[in-house]
Length: 273
Ligand code: FPP
Image 1 (cartoon, rainbow, N blue to C red):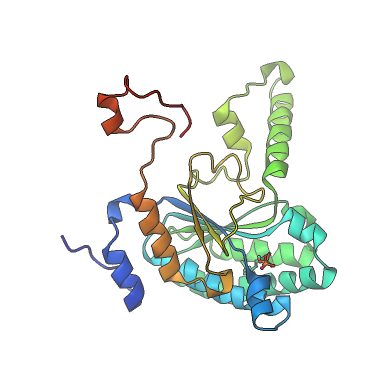
Image 2: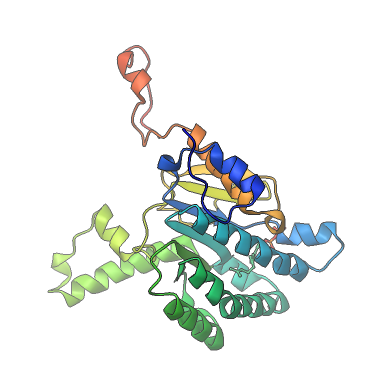
């Protein structure tokens, strides 16, 4: 059966899309964008040139994901550690780059029906950046297609700490701490990602095999796809390659697959997914 190719894909993307099962696309893809510095170094350019080139990769990836109707895409733009440990000049450059992206990109996001959201401690970012973030969020708030979430000043451990605090404060407001109910759903409702399903697929560029404090709770069952491609070289077709790899994997969520059921008494299987 010939699947309908979504409008706007280039030839390479269309060829890859044709090999996918459109009924089993991931509902949420998270990406750790890495390798901007290495990309620049290989060209004897300053690190910031890598970040600038990284914006082109963001555009291509967002547009392709929206065109193939991925419901949610989350990009790790910078971590709390990046923000606190990198030279001020680099952080300032990233802030300016982000501000410019947010200003210039709104029409394209609207054209692609993309709604913008953020995760991370926004309140610690410079005021003008926060204002720009808020106005871009509002300008795209009525879009009904893909949710693009930018992780800015994000740390998964900080998110969990904030969630636990928020749980306790909510209980205190609603009749006292003796009413505190802690279960998985309650934790999820207090995470920054309460607007999102858990990612099915996490992509990391530039070959690094780490999660780097990204969505630790939410990635519990995600498939991990690591590509050697450096972030500034990443394009829509690389995303489709990641999805193809995802579709080859078999997801078990800690259970057994169908084949195993017939002879599971023969093999002792662990409970890990
Ligand atoms: C990782 O490369 C990348 C970053 C810390 C910044 C990511 C920022 C962008 C792609 C551009 C701005 C973002 C948006 C959403 C417009 P690295 O510097 O850690 O690379 P290295 O590991 O090779 O040094």
